[in-house]
Image 1 (cartoon, helix red, strand yellow):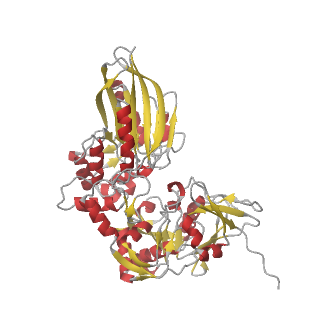
Image 2 (spheres, helix red, strand yellow):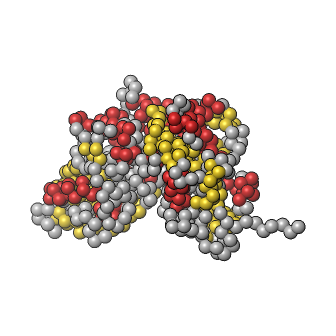
Image 3 (tube, helix red, strand yellow):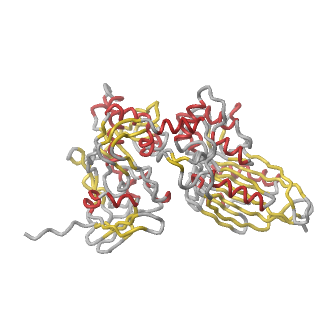
Length: 579
């Protein structure tokens, strides 16, 4: 009885890391990137005769190269999108889509995909006309078997992405595309695809999520894994690398930005007229050192944009301490947001309402490592520094909210902190399961966060919520400036949406000011937890910020195996000096 092995290589969440250049630091990338995975892909192809190479979405957005490629694609520029060109050069066999692939609009997405040498599939995307994609595809290959013969193999590929994409990009997709439920699309397409194919692969741009299926779920990995008919489930979106094998399937979730390649090996047994999958293995492989790819026009344009001067700064700012104290870096973003919204609402009744500005630390370590922090030195602020603070292409949105909404907003933000027990030393402070970019600071308010209470518990963590020193009333009206991504799930009524991306607005506001004021405003602080200390990890460079370390009473404990600087924070007031 003949046997064979199919090796499937998967990338996901590359976010246009294909040039080998770190545009935010203006230097070659020091980790990740598709160019570092290329030698690994070549080695596997040379060693294993039956291979597939697939991408699981979020390819076209994520850095200044992606921004410039999208801008240039709207002009007289006929070269392929640099990310698509990179996939073509490596000979990808198929791809799915991710939510961020829609961030520049359908026209730019269509233009990018038109140059792809591989098919692209998405089962829960509904479009008509030239931009419609196949809901699934079948790849026909002839695999080399252990007896030296080649036999036909039919591989079904099904693409899926979060239905929330339609909300996050509604300004692009309204009346032009619909994105349905992941589980409904999978249940609809899988039986027929399974009947036609020997192997079925789901390119599901979604994280693991709840164990049981829920309507409209964003992260459906666990629910998909329970469906019959999938031999390989490729996941993404969450940026949390993972592999697993069960009796029925292999699961791979590769690291983002080309940090890892997902590899699944399926053992096949020929049973006369068809193949049977008899075994599964899965692993994640890291990239290796490799030369930088050739420069493209988009890369040169991105470098020039990154170096463009915007304003000046009198003191350095960073997000090193943005999860434990009010951050000057976030404050300058908040002031720019508020200034733009105030001018946009001038002459409208809402202009009389108090204005609050919500900003989160998009780059604050965590799963991305000790180098993933925003840092702007004193002196010239360039465009790359603004992109460091605000890496996404969101729009700026103003919502009319109530004091009750603001309190709920802050309670949700405070989920990032673990509950601390009084009298217990060295408790971990940050809940690694909560993304740091959900931790909004609401500038324009003052408040305390009580970590002795459970997150979103009955008692509440937000204390002393005030505006201009006066307690906020539940029904008191406010306007809050935020981003379009947050606005899709936030309470309140939208009263303004910017036409330009929020980062471009920040650049205009910074240039208008010329010199940025980084004097910190204490929007929030922790309430005392008597006798407790907490541990938090940050960037190694934070050890040089004596002013912040002193203000927090932080003790430097050293460097963790992952390269973070570990701090001990006192969560109780210092003892009073004797008279």
